[in-house]
Amino acid sequence: MEDKYKHLEMIQNIIQRMATNSFMLKGWAVTLIVAIFALADKDMNQNYFGLTYIPAITFWFLDSYYLQLERKFKMLYDIVRQKAVVEFDLNIQDINYKKTKDKKLRYLNCLFATCEWLFYMPLMIILTFIFQQPILSFLK
Image (cartoon, rainbow, N blue to C red; front, side, top):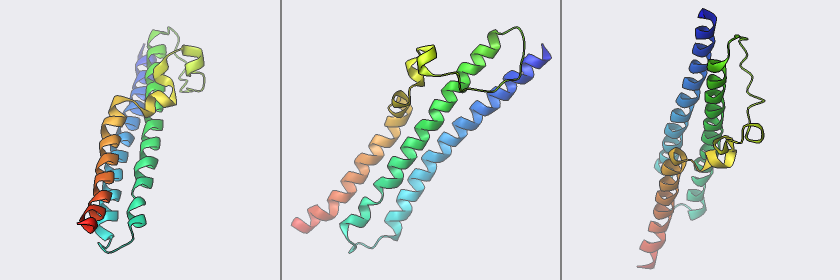
């Protein structure tokens, strides 16, 4: 029984790491975008500001990947919890949508999970609004 607790603890630590990575990515996304705006000159070309979409989208995709891994390890945790024999196996290759029929494991579902789009969509909207400000002030 002690082995089972150790195995579950190992999986729980991995899940915690995935959640921490997701949190750090969100922080880095905001930091990098703010840094690009801080270093940009107000007379600079509008295309330069378009570069801020690249880290936002990249971090969104990477964050979704970590969310997918986190969900797979949660499923592994549940599988190990129900097993009688402990094998200390951390392989998640067999845990996928096709075998489990759990839609949460699909990458597209992770990409548009509530915790993802509620952070990255407003970020994209704010970026779009900021890009429009110089254009609107120029037209006046």
